[in-house]
Structures are given as C-alpha cells and as structure tokens.
Image 1 (cartoon, rainbow over the protein chains, first blue to last red):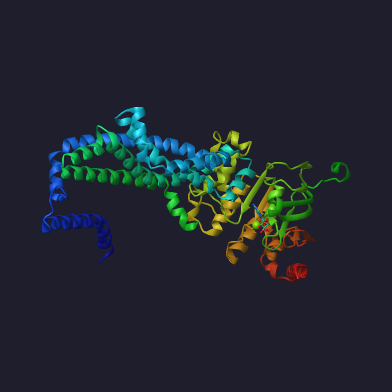
Image 2: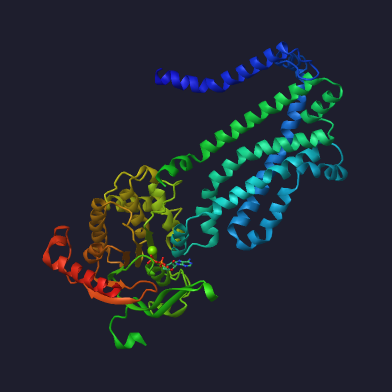
Length: 258
Length: 268
Ligand SMILES: Nc1ncnc2c1ncn2[C@@H]1O[C@H](COP(=O)(O)OP(=O)(O)O)[C@@H](O)[C@H]1O
Ligand SMILES: [Mg+2]
C-alpha cells in the first residue's frame, strides 16, 4: 500500500465501520426475525426519518438552540469562575468544595425543581444544559492557570508585573488550550442535559419527540431521534475540535519541545 | 551611612541573610547567614551543590522572597518587594509558546516602565531594538520563529535577550546553560561575556560548573551543602575577553583545581 492509500483508508475507516455496523444490525434483525417494536431495522429508521423529516428537523433545531444557549452560558460562567478559582487561592478554597459537591448531584434530579420554578418549556432545558456542562470548563480553565510554571511567574514578578498583568499576559493565553479542550467534552454534556430535561418534562425538542414516540410504541421514530442526537453531537464536537485546532495550534506543537 | 565612608557603595549588600521555608516543625533552613556585597557592574558567580540554596539566594536579592532574618539592600535601600530593573533567566527558557521569539522578547517592554507607557506608540522602534539584540546573539532573522521551532541553545539565547531587552541594572541567571550540551554551553559563555562587556550590567550567575564560573565571573562565591553558607570568596583576575583556549591554560586550570580542592575538603 502506498502512503496515499493508507491515508485514504484511514479517513474512510469511520464510515466503513459505521456501514458495517448497520449491515450487521440489518441482517441480524432479518435473521432472528426481530419485531420492529423491539428493535427496528436501520433501513426502517432511515425510511421513517425521511418520512417525518420536517418534524425531526424542527425538533432538532429546538434542541440545538436550547443546547447552544446553555452551552454559551456555560462558557461564560465557566471561564469567569475558572479564572477566579485559578487566580485566587481564597476563591479556590471557598468555591471548589461546593462545586465538587454540586457536580456530584445527578442533574436529572434538578429538572423537576426547575420545572416547578420555570414551568414546562425551553428554560429548564437551557438551564440543565448549562448546569451539566459548565463544570468541566471551570476545572480546565482553573487547571490552566494553576499550572503556570513558577519560573514564568518569577520572571513576570521581577519585571514588576501586577497580578492582573500576569493573568492577562500569561494566565489567560495559557488557559486557552485547556478551555478549548474542555469545550469538546462540555458540548456533549450540554446535549445530554437538554435532552434529559426534554425527556423528563418538555413539550418540544428531540427528547420530547422520542418520549412521545415511545409512548405510542413508535420505536422507529424513537431511534430516528436517537440518531439525530448522535449526528448533532458529532457535528458540534467536530466544530469544537476544529476551533480548538485553529486557536491553539501552538499547544499541540509546543508539547514536543517541552 | 555607607555613602560617607566609601566612594562607591556596593549595589547589593547582603548581611547575615537566612531563609527558612515552611514554618513550625516542617521548617527547612535553605540559606544560612549569607553575607556578600556586589559592586555595580560586577559579574559574580555562585557555585555550590544542588539544593544548597543558590536559587533561594537569587530570589532574596530580587525581592521575590522576604528574608527570614538579616537584610538585603539594593542601592542602600532595604528590599521588601520585587525590585525594579532586574532581568532573570532560568535553566528552562520559559518562553511563551504562543508568542513568536520577537514577541517573547518584547514582553518586558510591555510591562516595565517607562517602556510600557510608550510601547503602543513606539512599537517599531522597540521591534528594531529586539532585532539588533537578536542579531548580536547570533539569532538574526529568527524573530518570526516560535520557541518550539528553535533548538535548546537558540531558546536560551532568546531567553538572554528577553532578560536584557529592557536594559536592567541587574541580570540574574539561574543555571541558564545547565540543560545544554557542552559545545553549545561554551558557545553561550562567549555570547554572555560579549553582552556583559558591551553593557556592563551587574550579573549574578548561579551555576554548578566551576569552569563556567571562572570563565565568566569577576568573583566566585562557593557555597556549602544545605543549609547553604558562603564558604569561600575568590576573585578571578584573568584578563578579558577570556577565550575558550584560555580555559586550558595553566593560569585558568590552576584556579579551577584550587576551587575544586577547597570544595572537596569542605564536603569531606
Ligand atoms: N518553595 C519551597 N518550599 C520548601 N522548600 C524549598 C522551596 N524551595 C526550595 N526549597 C528547599 O530549599 C533548599 C534550597 O533550594 P534552592 O535554593 O532551590 O537550591 P539550589 O538552587 O541551590 O539547588 C532545598 O533543599 C529545597 O528543597
Ligand atoms: Mg536552583
């Protein structure tokens, strides 16, 4: 095999594996005569997706924008709290234990409370997405700041730099790759958050679609919803990974030299 | 009080300086009773075994650490916070990987007054200064490169440039060549000597290489094992500029041997 062929194969691998997986699934359903209500064949799921694509798209967009708003808020909140925790030992010792305790709460448990406060609709989904995705951002940003080399700090301090200057000239650029790395994780979590909220008590969105289809024994539509979430998740992850590469190329190469 | 009795007061005066890290039972004495004077424009080297408090000594002189006892004075004033007009370079070059070499070297000018105030308006002038400095250490044309694109020796040259670009009065070097191979290290001795002879800043070089100390310094201070004490002060009166050939000549070799003997006796 030439290098070009190897590379082409490497790029094709995820698609090949996906296709193989669907083929095995399809064949297994036929071979074992599995009922559609238990596990629909992939071809049925695609057919249903095409058939009902306008409502799928509509509900996907609903989920996408609640997720995006929750995620955006998580970035803002996560960066601010992460910077505060990373920059100040007092904020760190005050907030960090609380954050860990809060992160340990299963987020599905707060959805009913949010619904009591905010009613059914987009607001609980946005807040759940926010709450579930901001923790990794906080931790990563704080880690980026906390791991500034002591020598770098000494160089800055001996130049007479203020804490603010150390933060803006060293801390924030250094925390950037940590931030972008956390976004990939956080966007996936944000999706989980909004879908959980829609499932527990929503009236729109892909989570709601799956729940109501499930209640009607329309398993194929439920699976179509599942695929839609997976596709959105992969696309958003890819977007975050691309932004990460663009913004912090130095961090990938810098490691090699140390 | 010092001003009246001697014509030139030393730039840095340390008297009976000790430093202990931690507190209570955990306390470790890193530096004990250090007394030394450094004259304006003098090049001193501090040698001693690892962990004897050399880096601690540097942090005390620059005011990054407060002394546990004793006093450090610079320009006759007791040092209480980080002093102005210092350049520092460490063994690891700590260049910022997100900045080009040029922008790394511009950093002190963005932070230190009076440059900070005029930086935006006069960027061109400062960039020119950086280019000249880069050329003088043999890095002409490398300004656009990122640190990871430079070899270890080139990174250390850039590090020296960053430490000197704001024309500090005192240059602090903490084992700056410790991680380099012997050839590169000896090349950089020459670079540093040249910069010093042109600019005559006061320089404190921490090293564990006796040849390096004797090659570069006017005065070599030898420290004992932890807790570090100054056990020997030796003036090096070899003419300058010193060359690598000189380091193999009897006058030079004798001094190195002599220092080594004294250190071995002390540690035996
Ligand atoms: N921040 C610190 N906290 C506690 N102990 C320290 C700290 N920094 C240095 N030490 C201790 O002080 C001693 C002197 O350290 P240092 O000045 O770095 O030595 P050197 O530079 O000569 O190798 C060492 O034994 C080291 O373990
Ligand atoms: Mg040291």
